[in-house]
Length: 90
Image 1 (cartoon, helix red, strand yellow):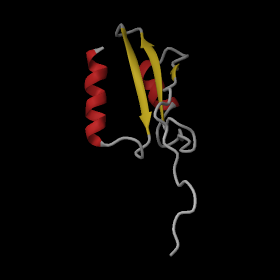
Image 2: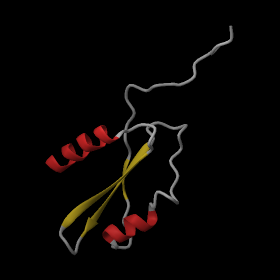
Image 3: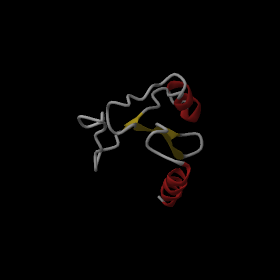
């Protein structure tokens, strides 16, 4: 009988999510969407965590923006709803 000889996946119990300040030209939400369009910005599935966060100040609306990219391999709809709920509490 064949089978898996070695490890087929590595699961990290903890992986620090890097959050970078991203809007450099003062474009707010539009700039974030353009610079980190999920169809153009690739996440490396070999490097944990398979998600990235970018923040930018939206000076015209006096608020902070969060753009969060996550690979579908690491999050499902239920988890996404919980995360959004937690972020809104902040």
